[in-house]
Image (cartoon, rainbow, N blue to C red; front, side):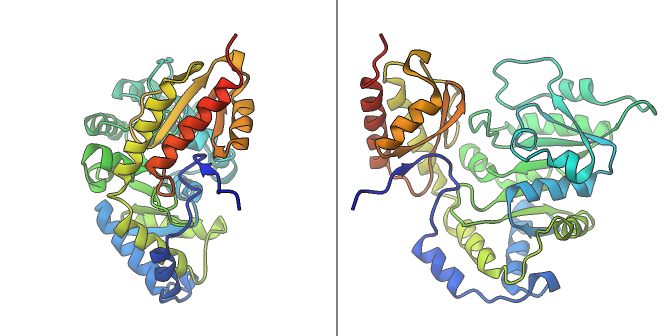
Length: 354
């Protein structure tokens, strides 16, 4: 049988480990809609403790985590502030408008090339609306850490502090899209609570990087999480014997966080190898587990390159017309990184730049 492809499309493509499957198989379950699934309750208590918050709500996906938090913080007609390249703008199907009836004011108002998804306190000042019947209410500020379209960029804690303090001065609510907060913490050495304490709510994902099959959580005080729980139900995210998934998430949190450093090392190794291939150039600095690289237009589009690479047994995703994203994770070894670099070199050599 042919070997399975080396899958670098995302850190969401992982398969549960044997130990994770055993944890799922032995999970004690109840009915989470009725509030009596013991494994879900244990996960929520554990994640709330890790984030330094009073409570947590387990939800099926990172998108639902963000959207339930947005709805919990806002009312229709409000406006939220988020970086122009945020996940909630590009990859959540217009949900803030459809589900919460809110507008988005993209930051920064003045373009800043190379900001990698980060902004500063002055950008918050620029974007907050005056209190007037003519304008939507500026209600919520969102930070994404790590920042996906910024190449897995990590927010410095001092910058988080400055931005959130300024936002609070404007009486804004604060949400941290921490889908890959685990990666940010491994990179910086900070604890999740070090970031989360600056926000009213924080989301985290168990299927990105940590290897669980599904699930995210939203953490905050008891009052806001009660609203998140209500909107989880409204958005169709209530689950029954969800302890099966919660057991996987618990196992991931206990066993798969520290090993993220290996994913970061593999991403750096991948970037180094790709940079040596003629016709390719690393597009963004590699902070964590994401590598974005540009393809010389004479080699064809990013989509065409990915299609040829698939035939060579390596999967990556086109991100822009001539940009490709590759993401390392626990199902890809260092040896496979080297194999992927060699395969890409072979594909490029077959379509040499004239």
